[in-house]
Image (tube, rainbow, N blue to C red; front, side, top):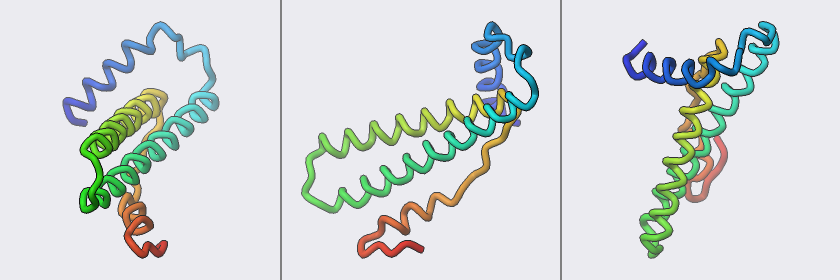
Length: 114
């Protein structure tokens, strides 16, 4: 476990300690961890989709304001993914890496789903 993982885990644990997670049963915590894990994957995929769209738009005559807005969306989605991952881990779950390249393949010009 890296220092950042330990620091993030400590930060989440500190924030959640007053919530009294011990009052919930193991099956409830497992369901919650799975939900947070699924959400983390969704947020990460959203970031990948917006990044792919942004990359495609850079070759078009679009405003810098639009590209800046897309960049902020990507950062927000990654922040959401990190928060969801930390919640899943705090609740005893894990978050699997997924194939983010599939989003790029689907959005490729002429884009056939692979």
